[in-house]
Amino acid sequence: MKKYIAHFIVSLLFTFMLGGCAQWGGDNPVGITGGSDEGYGQSGNLNLPQNGSDLVGSWRYDISESRYQIWTFSVNGNLTVIYYNNDQINTQHGTYTTSDNNISLFVGQQTLNGTFSIQGNHLTLYFGQDSLTLTKVFLKTE
Image 1 (tube, rainbow, N blue to C red):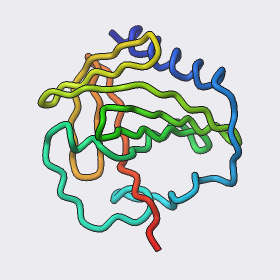
Image 2: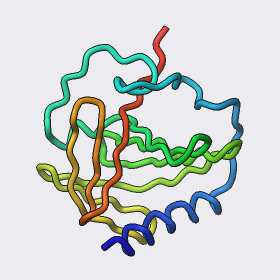
Image 3: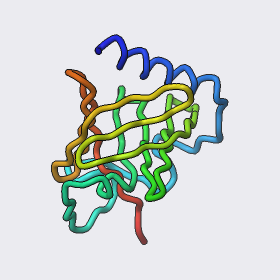
């Protein structure tokens, strides 16, 4: 299973690299600032029940100090993953479905089935014995 997860992530990252670059204006995407256990940027109160609708929104996955991903789950089932690598931005689009705590991701020709859990501001995606933990992203409000 680890090989499958690694293949999926490498395939996703390779697709990002081929997807082209976008304008970049600094160390954080526009509207997203700072980071803490409460998420990136300003938050307010969180009350996240344990179902698929709680995925809706943006989540950050840190790869290294200068590389990270923003995963955005839309209410209509669309998934956008934006990969930030130093001064380059690459975007991958797909879809997702949930049933209870089960999740299926469909990106390009790849399908990945697993489960998820949300604890406070942290989303953990489980694929077999592998997992990714993402932190809720909050847009800066004026």
